Length: 60
Image 1 (cartoon, rainbow, N blue to C red):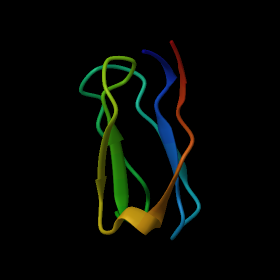
Image 2: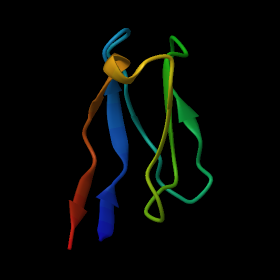
Image 3: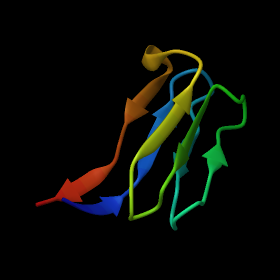
Image 4: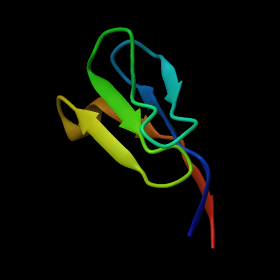
């Protein structure tokens, strides 16, 4: 799987956050969720699984 975009939308504050390179750990403005991994891996950190919407784009 090739990662084209590694991003999510926080459902609490509405921020769309994207990790653009490996170890680029990005957190939304309210602190409820984060993304990491850039184009190398998809990592999510969150208060609860229902606090974000997945917006990543991948291809085989």
